[in-house]
Length: 481
Image (cartoon, rainbow, N blue to C red; front, side, top):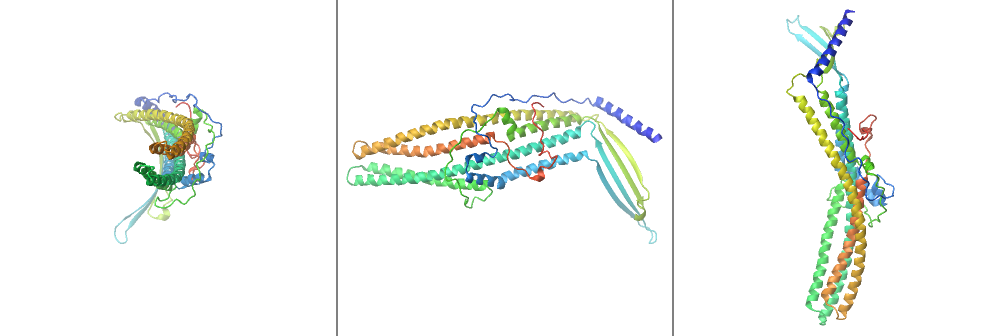
């Protein structure tokens, strides 16, 4: 009965001390929720109807491209680094969660005192010590939530890295395809220019053309050959880039079959509303999760000004013989209340620091949202104008071909100067190469659009997405903090 009264007295004393400590510390309270910026942005300038696919590269209907992207997603070292960073963040979250569990330590010791040969005394001791911090104000819970949110943001970073990698791989593959076609085109143009050179040299030999005409045509042949050299170098560099992207040394050869043609671009995919984009893009989700994590860190700093209550229990036994070790036990229970009184303003400064970090995260979130909107709008705008540019190039090429044929015939009949013919053929060949480059540019704009609207698609390992893991159930995005 007396022990129960003492226990209740201790509990009442602890409660009184806790209340007094809260008054003495004069703790700050968290700031009111702040609305997220740019939640009501206007719609995008264009909206397609083609159903959107997270594995966006499959929309090109190109098995070779899919092979390259899948190899990159499976073997790229940058993505592996992001994955291991994800595992690290997951482990940190689980480590923080371990603070919720009681700590239990076992101590086993022994001593021996020397005396005479017949009077040696020894002693064996065994102790069990348990400790547990009661989460009075939710500080531990807030710390766990902050780490879980950071781990979930790291998972979104991994998804964003996978999206970026897939886009970089697709862009490099089609740049290599276009460069190969440019080399074929240059080979054909070089043959044409050499054939024309033979004609000019023949006319020069019979006095129908001047030496300047021969020199100009020879310079055009050399210029075309130079473009071949530049294009061959580009092809090798692109092969190196692709090999590194798929996790292979660049000294090797690219043995994988590449696309045999530049793809026809399908209609625009469904872009959706800006609010949909914010829910879908992994970098935006990561920014929001880090903002929420910073908010939880503010709560930790505020609650760290409150008292902490630690419970402990110690049970020990000693004996001069191991066989008697469990015969007698001594135990004690402790309760310790620690309340900060004077710390030089350290805890208050920590609150100010975490509040400043939260404001940074809010600004970073707004910047990420604006960047995501801009990427979508830029890709839509560039592709729209690129379509018009391609049509203009086709018209120009048709006119240039007609002009070259007419000027060539006039030159052969002595009614035009060769320099006009040379300018016409240069213009025609540049337009042929420019049209091919313009087709590639439109593909790159479409890849940029897919990257801008893509969500996460990279699979996570089962041991990282277990039940209750922060990666499996990240905090849902909200409109305010």
